[in-house]
Length: 309
Image (cartoon, rainbow, N blue to C red; front, top):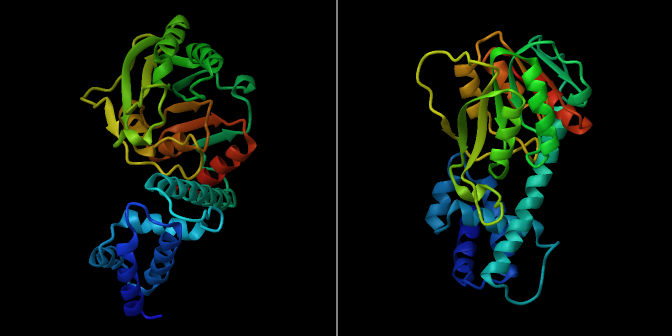
């Protein structure tokens, strides 16, 4: 069918998509949109949507329902709430499928790791760390307080005098983790904040929807901090988290490492995850050593680091 005919068909259908749209009509709109997009030249998709009176979000919604309607296809009318729930389900499935595709592609990357990077598939608590490191990035699962307790003792004995530890923590456990670090003999320097551009990106904790991610800045003794002003907050762009459920945004980590950790320093990361901190260390010319105990996540991190220029 030609672009013109598809456009006419869609314009006839759109007025029937009221506040109580049927799934059948949403599926039909999605089918037309998926046929139209390949027919448009690059850069013409959004102007075309505007011409037919659709936002990019609405077009994405209808396309998602079309692609997954076979899995969730009730009869009769749906309320707007049910419709949106269908879309959320479809998007979650799309997101999972895309993540698995990206992870498989990253794992397949070949080549040695850069000489400034050392990644081990190991439990950090049994790994033989260097006797002294210049800095540490600590980001265990935020509800695992025993791991924070181990990390506090490990940082206190491994970090060089004046070195800095960046400790990510959930807001609900902020005071507890700060106390654990202090009890281990570490000094509080400051609290950095990764701001969410929209609070809707954060998962609620009880009645609270946190708009930021705390990063405690701790030191062993008097901190060695370069002169100059530095913002303690960084608004990160929405993260697609293509490699891991708990993947952290790259930009704030790059910013703070570049300002607070000298090039050539050794940064230790006992909870490497998918390797985001290692990527940040590479781009800021910091030497990085880390561990990841989950085999699948370790392979993702290794492939990701092998691809970093």
